[in-house]
Image (cartoon, rainbow, N blue to C red; front, side, top):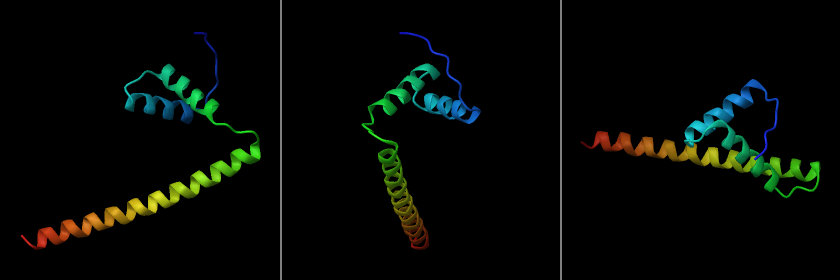
Length: 85
């Protein structure tokens, strides 16, 4: 393994540290995993990357809407169960 000096924005470092903690890892392995993930994306051009990012955002928006609907449904069911006691 080799060392590399990288400069991160404070928020980037904070987010990486938080992810590492959630996964039970230290900071360095988390950074290596993030770099591997980036390198494994078969992107040929910035245009292709931009298109992929837009599609990911649309998918995330759909998932958030669906989760919001699910939470609202669970809330309704729980309220109804309380009423029926």
